[in-house]
Image (cartoon, rainbow, N blue to C red):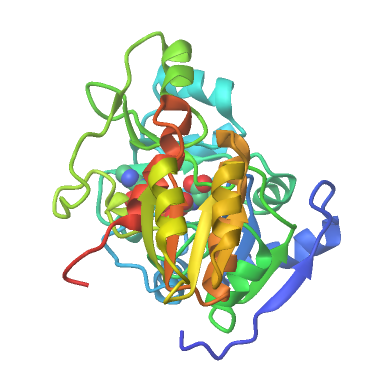
Length: 347
Ligand code: TXA
Ligand code: MG
């Protein structure tokens, strides 16, 4: 796909999507097309999971390495079971507690799922999203929909249709514009195929919530970010979710003193602040662009990617991030910030 197809934009009511629009968009997917649509986390780029060549189109449009497997989205438990060769009790318990919702489960894959989706693995990641538009679309399709986040590979995930257009206009068939997403960062990915239940990617469903449903201990994947070869979830490599600017994370006092001690910014400087003190220090510095994010983790996650897209558009070359509190509640946010700040010397 070379960037020369016409990308159609379909605006829908996010709460009560118009059935005739959903039907038109489902028809595009049925014919093997690529359609971006909102979920409660971020926008996804969907294709028929049973259509290998359509799925190949996702990798081409995103520039995604073929080693990075894709999540299969379903509109019903039966759809999930159809994608898996085993459905343990734990999957039922987690689905009952968190679906539809921002939890992705890794399970043994069914032979119906093409190898391209799972990057040759014997496991498949499945999720039922909690967004009226995503659910309506999935219900209109009689097959599961493979959908990674609808951004170019290694760029920031989109939380609005405009972000999708910026990265993928001319490379995909359509975008369903259902406004801003609610949660703002990607789903929690939990692997149920190992001895110990393991969280491969932190998200808004927390370890504590999963442990209390399953009544057992859950681990975080402790593999170093750079371990490419045997990474259990290749999309979790360090250089993901990155804006164009260089990102630095600083504790509040250090950020404030750095802002105060810089005469005037030599480069266009972006600041992502949480506290009033950091905001005012940033505002005093000429040549800086400041964004104030919520000082609690849910609101912060919801606003984070949108703020980064904005700063990228303003052409900032460095983004200073006021470090959020170091506790479990902020874990998923820290995870994304760390990936953004990671500088790969080989890149
Ligand atoms: O919230 C979300 O999960 C969004 C929306 C669109 O649903 N999707 C999303 O997809 O973030 P993507 O492709 O950007 O990230 C999927 C993550 C990657 O880290 C990938 O490596 C991992 O899930 N994954 C997919 N299949 C896997 C598998 N079989 N085993 C382990 N990890 C897998
Ligand atoms: Mg992604």
